[in-house]
Image (cartoon, rainbow, N blue to C red; front, side):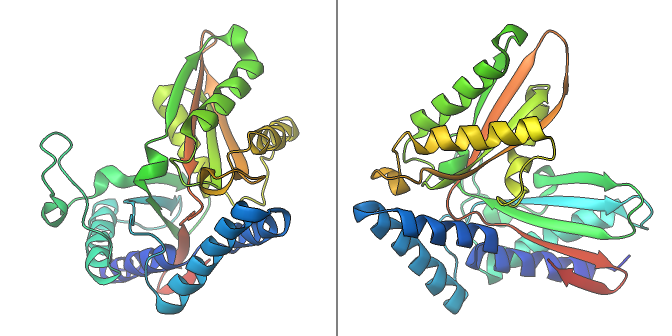
Amino acid sequence: MSGGNMIVEVVSELFKRAETSIPEDVKNALEDALTVEEGVARVQIATILENVKVAGGGRIPLCQDTGTPLVYLGVGGIAEVDLNKLVASVSEGIIKATDEVPLRKHMVDPLTRENITDKISDYSKFINLEILPDKDYLEITVFPKGGGSENMSALAMLTPSQGIDGVKEFVLKTVSDAGGKPCPPTIVGVGIGGTSDVAMKLSKKALLRPITERNGEDEIAQIEMGLLEKINKLGIGPMALGGKTTSLAVNIETAPCNTNGLPVAVNMQCWAARRATARILEDKVEYL
């Protein structure tokens, strides 16, 4: 597997790509929304698309909130990887991107609120690791998460008797209560099952899936589409100024859970659904 310097450069480049453009699936969905919206809602979507065009043309961040620098690593099970060196290189790549993209220096101590961005040398707490069995490559996905949408995260420890109806009710209430705070149109990530922390991780991981892809299980895919329809009937609309497009997609991920529980988590992403991925095999880098 490639050396640390390559990882540093790839991570920095991924943040540059993620911060200055949105994935094609999201852009296409926004363009589709433009065709169905009217009045103020249409103006808001048009403004968003113009923002995307300007940011891409000038290679400048889409939003002043460049997000918390989350990274997802998929490590091939048969790849030769020095995990300590990999994590250190990812951290260095984030620091490089902070200076060169640039990313807004807004990382603070959670209690004193002191800005500590320039003091952070280890971003391991923001790195998520997954083993990819039988793969021989390293996959890196950067996911800068904006504060407005992240602040609307919610967790419910439902009882099994509440069932799927309880899950749907919780998701709808969470989106309704959030209103315009997560900068709609949003993407709604839902995690069902596991434990409290697993459900939260699933809800965020769900946001990495392209919005054109439904869950592989038909029943869950139907729930995704049904929830999206109900969410868009709330009438919150783009930037909460009313309209038909409150959310672009609902993505659900699940995990087995204890028989006496039903954890459900919701994590929303704003219209600037920033993510970028690269695969590395030996000395070759493929940006996906």
